[in-house]
Image (cartoon, rainbow over all chains, first blue to last red; front, side, top):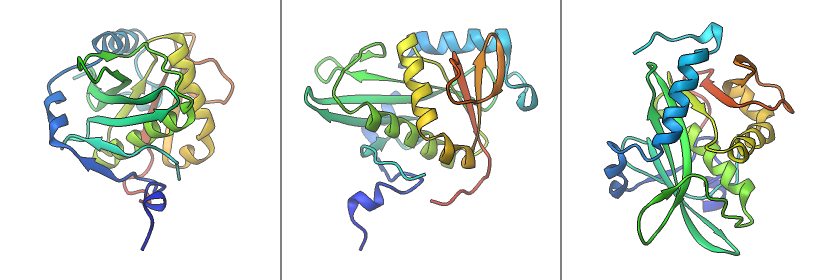
Length: 55
Length: 152
């Protein structure tokens, strides 16, 4: 049996689903950071070979 | 990539993660959120401290809890978990402060050799994107999974 420490070193981490966190699904916790990201992306876009269409 | 990180909790959508920083200054709850941007499949990653009494989020706090490497590893782990669930997603990250951006850069640099096997990694400098180079003072970052099913 693998130990908790070993399991926690998997490449894709084990994540405990906690439904109390679902309340954040429709809440932007970091609005200033998101606004900064959108502004920066509007200005310079994405890396040239990885551009995605605007939503 | 094998990272010693904190145990992660998440809501069912795997877009908001919570973990507890445990150090000399006590147990500090932290939240990581990946939020859709104005671009399709592009999500903004941000994280900060959660005040356990008020529930308010502070993304400029520097907790100095002596575990910054483990915190960084945990944030990186959220990117693995998120992109495992959403393999076509791009993840954008820039700090709320220059210090926080530097923290992101340190985190990517520390795990770059492993992470580049799994992700395309770009840094933004002087209003241009370029493939990430260790030691460059980037202002923002974009990562995208290379393969749809990396080893778990």
